[in-house]
Length: 369
Image (cartoon, rainbow, N blue to C red; front, side):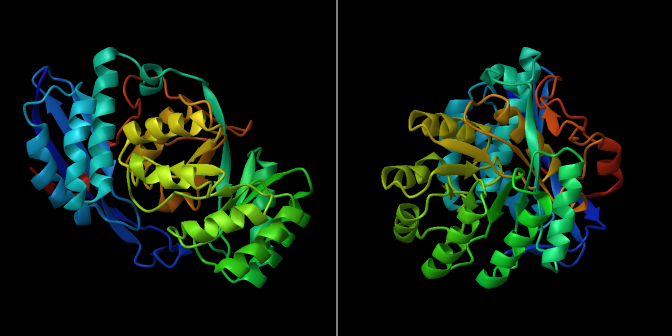
């Protein structure tokens, strides 16, 4: 089996609601473009992946994928993923890691179809369902956060994570209001999106320790390893870092060796695909560390994330970033959270997701080949 076709179809995504998580992740225009990556073979099997998100149009990364990665794929056996992966990563000096991630996801999709089984079965299934948590955007008031958290609690979701306004005193008030609203036993997390200096991170961390939050995510600059080491020494609440920058397996090593974080973090888009996530999760497992999977930025990436979550032992939850309208697009059937608060492992071969090819055809902007 040889790869004989690689193309990227850019398709429009309109009507996206305004969203904000931090200064580098916000959307006000309501439009973006995703890319449908297609990797075809001489056997007739095809693998797919999505490239892009509501805040990061595929028009940014698509041309580089075709120019630099397609030549490395043509004529290769798609099941030689490790060999292909080794060829792709040096190109990260020239292209986005998101492009490498899309290629890797499509190759895993193709492999699952070749084997006639879901990707999590190829990896080795550890669970068939996983609890979901709601992950807020930045809201206008403490009362709005509290009301949203109560609504998800009452719908059976396992937990609620706060993306706060990123002003320490206000953020503490938000966390206090949400804890009062949901009660002492409901699971809460805080993701401060790299917004504090060290003194503020200490102050907020101590407050959410007192409030019984499960983890404290990204309080400091994403590469401030020195202060993360100090912060972890002063706080009892588990610290979670390493979601960014967009990087591969080797980027995790200093965080582990310097004991700068309790949990590791990543997703198929910003860490280069399923291959990197699985390797990192196993690396974390060797150090008895949790590996929590971040939202993937688009619907098909989240399906890929779900396969990994169902195949690794050391993860706890499946993240659902809010609002839905800013993150779900291009599938005929999206991942759903049941009344039991669970999402279930896909059962179809490969990714096992039904792509809405009719929508993509109607919204096609360009086909890059």
